[in-house]
Length: 239
Length: 210
Image (tube, rainbow over all chains, first blue to last red; front, side):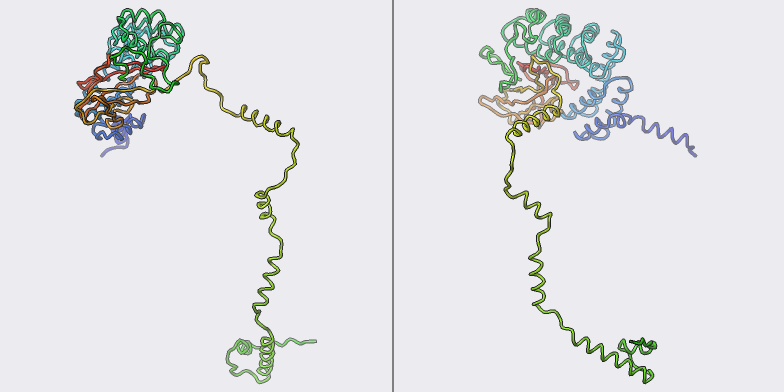
């Protein structure tokens, strides 16, 4: 016969794997809304709950599961990708704590994981987070540094550009223009090293010199993505 | 002077239309006399005719309307208003002052730069043999049918979307089943499923090309 304590323990064990449901029911509902089967929802929820317990963000894992399901990836491969992603998040968190950031917020951990996947090292990630005035700025700075590195600018130089822009007090949303500016310079035939130097000198800051095409976004009522003066034949906005 | 006679219960039944039974002769005579008097009184009453109804309604129509109805009518009738002209600008100034005090505070933005949270981005893909092309990404919850692109000349498919400022990952979906990265994007990232997502960073002043 099962005693009351044993019954409560069993109930606790049964509920524990579904901790995500209790903590973030909207994430589970999001997966159900997108048509993920219950078995996959339960597995992803388990991994996400474990991640949350480790101080890792759960939403990127859920979003990755939804992405895989949308791409019609088999459930077992989705789970494999989710597990790999969780490990990357864990490594990113360790990198942040290793550079003196004891309790990094979820979005910062997610941005750090992505930046490290795109080539930034632990010290470089820590340098961006150190220079950021807010956690939100840290996340954006990491994304921008990774995007600059993806355009061929060296990671040290890309991180330096972002750190200097932050220390100059440049609005963190303005940082998001730097990849566009770099891209426009590249479209004009500049080498990545030159682009890095120009950006390091302040190009791309609001009102700064050397701002390339593509600026002037929305108030003009045209798709701001399209620079008006790219060379003929150049693919300017895709997007 | 009148005297009140107390009838027996049998006499009450008789007065109510019951049988006289063994009612004593004197009591029955008194009861009959009373019944005759009631019948004579009843015969003397006339039912009100249409003339009475008309007379009553005529009186009702002549009574003044209720005060509440009159008030409503006053509201909807043109009324002359006397006003000193000086009150018009004073009232306008009071209204403006009230609006200035009551309006919500302006958002905390830098005065020198226009802040843009959403930027229009144009996606293009050359796919002359495709029947349909859509763009799906983190901005659409990866729904393959959310943003179908339009076919232009030369097999070019395009769509312009308002995207929030920030980083977005995306792929093109050809014919509803083939997911491909943007061939013109220089920023690609492993999607974890054996494919590649294109990465787009949208700044507040617009994007050039990922």
